Image (cartoon, one colour):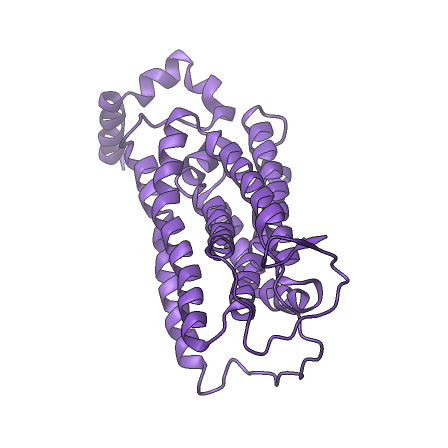
Length: 307
């Protein structure tokens, strides 16, 4: 069962509605669509401030952390066309719910894997593999569905080009707002407990998913649809925008984890600590003697003279 524009329940197998002039829906429908996109992007960005210190606690290198983040981005690129095609068959609302539900499952699994890694239950290659599957493949593949389905939903329910442009701009604004707010919230939560953002993110997606399930109307589906021509990414009307977008997202992604990584290396904000796996040896008297700042500089200068 779905919900029509008037708030009434409609069977999913009901008669299709023509797209013609578009179907007006209330502002709450647009707000829920934006909220779904905001939630999915927040689930990603909420973790960025804690991923560098978390990887340090788990004993992962910067290269391994970058691999997890890059795999997620690759999955977004590869699965976005798939979700666009599925939204034509399953409906926009259904694909939005899949994105939110998949985000809950993958982020919850990532939180459990991280918790197990901090307790020493899993480590090394097994830990890295589980992080790649949950945070990389799982969340990357499901979060890609949200912006695609949201844009298609806005295109379905807006009556004209002006309203359509405004609706798509609202989706971009929701993404931008998540990029601004989520890292701040993630950093504040991580200051309370390193794993707290990992549990807050899926919990927030559960709330948003329930709101979308109960309140978002189904978008109209046409009785007949002409097959759209395939558009090549090398089309002269398209590739300049793709190049600009690629450059912007590359610059943003490259700088996303740099502040947290710099804080980890410089010790700003909190005293640097070794991975938990080696913390027992760090507490030994010889290790404490060698790792004090004053004696470390003395040892370094002595080694330099010996060299």
